[in-house]
Amino acid sequence: MKHNGKLNDAKLYLSLLIGGVAGASVTLLLARQSGSKTKQMIKDFPREKTKKYIKDVKGMAISSVDKGKGLLGLRKSSLSRAVEAGREAYKKEILIRYLKRLSNRA
Picture (cartoon, rainbow, N blue to C red):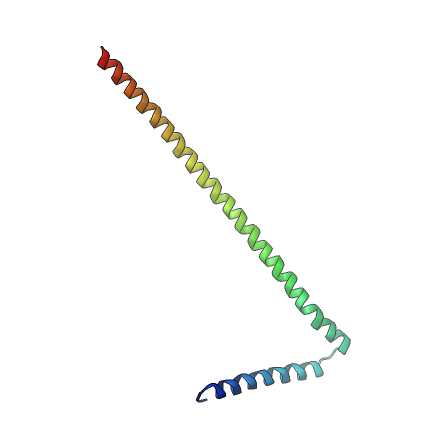
């Protein structure tokens, strides 16, 4: 199909839309259940999809939070060790300076 501008694109989208509506209409007309059941299914479909989506998103959020807590625990542990090593190095440096001063006095 050649595209010679916006008119052809509009025709394509309109054809797709009409085909989709026609297909849905035929499906509803040929369905083996009553109209009230079909209507109820149409009403319930968005609710069910929304509930599933919320459940999935909630699960992903909980998983992400748990992963974040785990990473935070690892980082906190590493940071605590680094701080403790820094304190020890500082104490040693102070002690060395103190001993040098004492030896210079003597």
